[in-house]
Image (cartoon, rainbow, N blue to C red):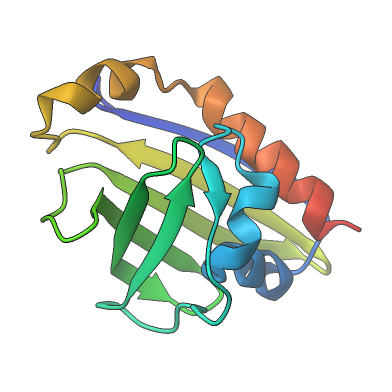
Length: 146
């Protein structure tokens, strides 16, 4: 890691497929977002490949488009967010899942803002800590394990 990348990981007592479905279907994300930044996402946007774009409504009412740049079903998903109709600002959210036994998965959540060009987002990017990411992991675990 560097000064522009933060990461957290946690073992979750659920299969990778179950956890991945909660991450890759944006309509579920507001339920476990530890940053309290996501309000809602339209149903029917389940991500299945690199190059797809899904939208989210933020708690401040803004619309965020998310371009999927890394994808491996059940194992890896990463996206570049942007304001609606704009190019990505240069920060990336990544989720990596590694099965570690029957019904157990090691989940790594990473925020990389090393390419962030949007000055107005720098304060929030700098304030994103491993603890913030861990909050999302803990919330995700609560949903996946029930």
